[in-house]
Length: 205
Length: 250
Image 1 (cartoon, each protein chain N blue to C red):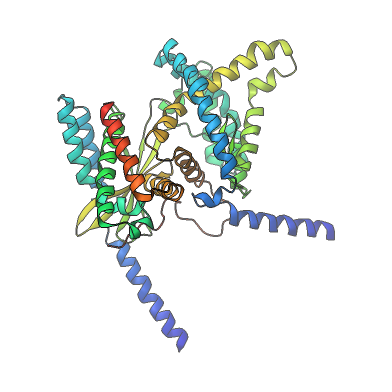
Image 2: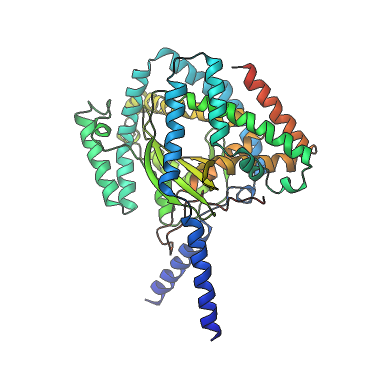
């Protein structure tokens, strides 16, 4: 009897977890990534507009498409819990600007290239899905780019970009955790370092 | 007979234990020699920036994109037989056939490999290595190590890349003749690595430029990339390594 009850509970749990993952509409998630990359390529990279306008459009596109509050909290790892509200706010602000500046530059390197979409793969995290794509390169093997998309209240946002198996969120988390552990200044030192990098990036534009 | 049984049992146990340790988490747990590795990383960084990258920049300056593409296609084609043998050892018939076809097409219609004609026909380049073969046979990767001049590696990949280096057809075709070694093998090896490291230079600079800890940035990228390898005796299909639990408290 106990076994039956256990099996029933397991079945209920499985059904719920299945529903949780099934909530993400694969077609809609893939369309969201297709639209975002198409906008970036057609309306920004290939558009004949001044650089200042390109920067503005990139900011709006990436700020809307990337869930930087979510990613920022994830990459700070366990340090997020101990950070003060001011530190959190400052970290998210600089993380947002640095990411947008970096991605604008990376996107520019896709000039003349196209993303070829290869469908989706389910994720073990609730409400998330992977959109698979490849980018044919001038030389050698095509680059594999996977987009981790999170759905919330019918809205889709990118929470991770995985290039050749390397998750940018995981990389940042490893790096920031090591930096905070090895640096007596902790989160404040990390924020100051990122601010300096952002400033340097802006001045070399 | 008993000895044979014992040998088989021990081999199976070794393989099983290797299976459980093949996949590392991409963090400091995989890096027990961090102190030494960091010192070698700093040395390598200085070497790349002061010697390696200036050579790459000079290579870009004296060649056009088209010439560099021909060199890179030629080098890739010379490496294709190594890939064929490894796909065979990985028991992947489809990939082996594609690799054979690519070598045949590019060596002839591609004018001795100068042009990658096969890619245009849908036979895209997807080369493999001895390191990947060892991984597919469930050989554990071991700890993260930084090799002087070479960069990030693991004992498994160091054995693999040494085997790939020695298997280079140009190397063994000229090994018995000192005159040819000096005139062909050494210059070819130099050009091969200048061509291969040209794209790595951009990647290295990109990864380290915005890093708050460049050592960890490179280690994390390397170890994550290595997790694409799968042990062929793994009991069940594993989820992609990047499908980690990605949730936060909201």
